[in-house]
Image (tube, rainbow, N blue to C red; front, side):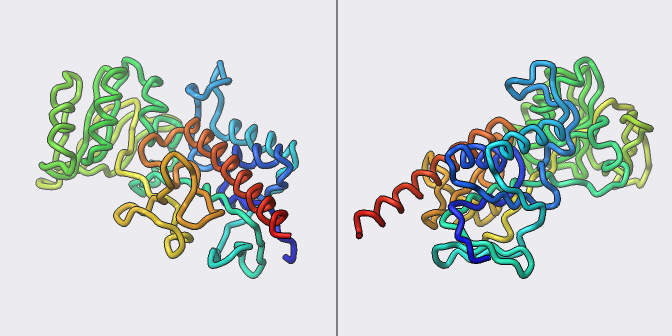
Length: 316
């Protein structure tokens, strides 16, 4: 396309849609290349009760539709397709969807992160029906119930400890005897009276018809198969940022791939390219923090474009 846009937003989730809303209201006419899997992790989340403004809770997909519709109301344009490559070597920046080229003076990267999954058919089938990937989001739904957490890192121990405040019983399933988690996190897990470590076990199947009722595990030493009766199943084996397209261009953490932003801003190492939401946040990973980050990216982008216009006027 020959048109050079003010801003292109890559990604459709709380961060991308909030950035689109703010950019659209600033008359920047943003193009949101939201991807085929728009909505992010909220699309596999059932009830959301911790987002301000939804007093009675809301289904994750419904909330994302609300976000999208609000941005669209103010003139944001959407392309439901996946970006295949980018070129940030000069401005205007180039974003490609197959053979189609889109150009913009600024870019907001809001591609989010993906929770690692075990890859079980039963896990996929019961997502939102007892299978979860976020204790902060969903632990309160399992008050006085039995919950199973799988994982062996700090995230798993942290999730198990957090859930123990709500659940009557928490099983922590780990494939080995030793944990990757730091000793202090293991000690916290062991100190919780209602957390039981289930070691040398791997999850073979999540059991349930319409909702989780048990988890089938296999002993890695004896090969014996058994079941843990449970009401909820939390997968806590980490997240991967969706940053593959940008690693050759943008500074990122070498071990995790998360994009690095400057200070309290959303600025990346390339002026005019901003990053928002879970693509650069591996600490909070909440819809509300992603939305706030998307707002910040839109404001940072707007100021960048304003400075460009000012410099162009003073140069003439």
